[in-house]
Each structure stands twice: as structure tokens, then as C-alpha cells.
Image 1 (cartoon, rainbow, N blue to C red):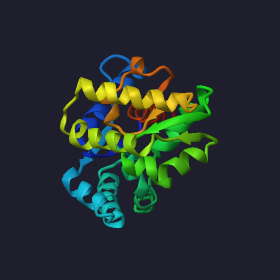
Image 2: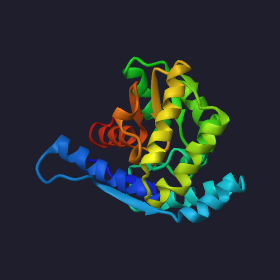
Image 3: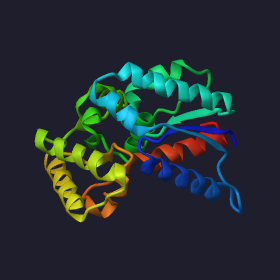
Image 4: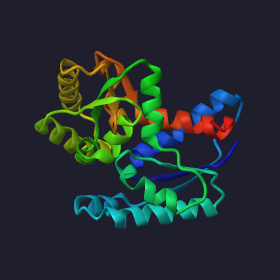
Length: 231
């Protein structure tokens, strides 16, 4: 098994899910006491969030690029950025190392297409829903991407940063997300991408009338396949 390098901590709540999923999926594939070969560089999310809010993306990218170089030096053969939003700087991170970066949006889009879905709703941070770095990557795979209305985008974003990133899961927020998903489905979405790694802590498959695509799990699944099979 090749060694996976994880750039995590954004937030650590979802990075913990990455660690669990990567090990479970490896055990499922290999059996017995097998677990994933990985190294983790966990950044301070408060620093990253300040740079996001200030629009200082190049500086944030430099932080992640340094993390990527440290993972390569530690023996990582393949890198993962364990957050959707920071794929805004994926090219900057990839350019800093000689090992490949497994892009989360690519893994997600491949799963969406494999399910026969072409028109998909996207939930995530405001950066992910409103900017083109993620939506455009999905569209390059032939997907039509729908996002919530402005007030709903603000609600989704607030719940991520004020609740899920600090380990708070509220039933009223789950109900609010259900309403947002219902509106996306009414607008024609055939599936919904949970395009923030924390959203999987809140939204379950039964919370949506159409298939949901949990990006953390999909990224982890693609990473294990790449590590074991070279896919």
C-alpha cells in the first residue's frame, strides 16, 4: 500500500472522519488487522479561516504548500487536502511537490456520474458554493451544478463554521438543511453533493429525497483505491 499524506485540521472534526474512513476502507479491502499507511499534517484552522475571510488565498495556499512538502518529506506517495474549500488553492499545493494530489472534486464528480446523475445540487461553504474553483471543476466533468438561493447559502455556511466545525450537531440545523435540499430538488437537482467535509456530520442519506454524495467518504474511497490499486 502506498502511503497517503493528509493535509488536515480544516476542521479537525472532519479530519477525524478521514482517518476513520481510510482505516475502515483499508481493513475492508485487506481484512484482518490491516490499516492505512498514512501521515498527517494538521494545520491550525483558526489561522486558515482568518486568511479565507480576508481573501488572502495565496497566503493560505502557502501554508498548505508547506504542509504538502512536509508530508512528501515524511514519505507520502499521494496527497489529499481534507477539505473542499481549500481546493481553491489545489494547484498551488500540487505545484509545491512532486507526488500527485488526489483532487476531491474529481473523485466526487466521478461518483456522481457513475450514479447516472447529471444535474446536482451543491452544499458547502459560501466560498465553495459561490466561486468557480469547485463548481467549474465539477462542470468540467459534464455536471450541471445548482446552488441554493442567497439566504439559504448564508444559512448553510453559518452552520458549518459556527456549529459543525466546533462539534455541534443540532436537530434544528438538520431540519433547515432538509428544507434547503428540498428546494434544490424542486429546482431540478437529481442528487446533492455534500460539498463540505463537515456536512456529513449532520446530513444523512434519509434526510434527502434524492441521492446524496458525501465528499469525505468518496475522497477516502478514491484514496484507498489509488493507494492499493494505483487507480
